[in-house]
Image 1 (cartoon, rainbow, N blue to C red):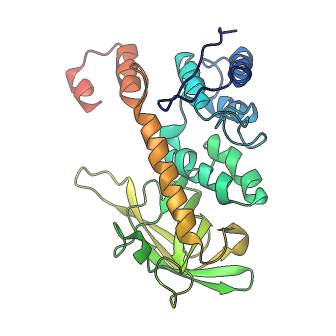
Image 2 (cartoon, rainbow, N blue to C red):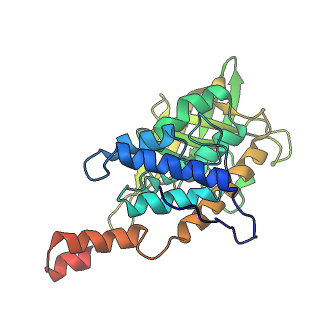
Length: 283
């Protein structure tokens, strides 16, 4: 067991020693049970979720331990040093943006159904916010969702949707009351990207890649059970989502030297043993 050391945030708050001990015990349990060198990453991610190490501040049973959020960095650093692959770049909208939104605003049914396969990356997520006429002014979205019993009929056009072509789920804000002020007539949904009426089109970049997409909704029926928050409260949920995104991106930027995607690329190159300068430039 690693000796307990104080974990302190920039604001001076300190994680309780009992919480640190609990997190360290779960980390040891994970690494003693699963060898990162031989265990499929999805299996380790699932075990990490089940042990409460996915998002340690989340409630118990939802990938967390209900402890100080600062301890997540302790988890990430220890697991990275042990060779556990981070899932962030595989599902960054899901892990960093959708998950905390679902925990904060979602129903218990949504939380139980969606969070674990999100963390294991069995189900990738995308963000359906921007539109051709609503970029910096997000409240100007014109995608319409009309209530029809237990469903909402969605028609509209989203754009710059990263990973939309491989996503299973999307977080979406749509206009449900055009008569109200633009910030007040919005509702937030979790959309199954495989529903009839969802068309994903690649946006080809000058590099030849197509990692962005536009998404067309044509009479797509989204179950009311996938609504987040009350009808008309979508702006509040959206702001919460964007704050989560900002916080997670900030945390991701504070990796110690030797961690992160660039370090992983350098490590991969060195382990390949290649001296081909063309391959090196491509990487």
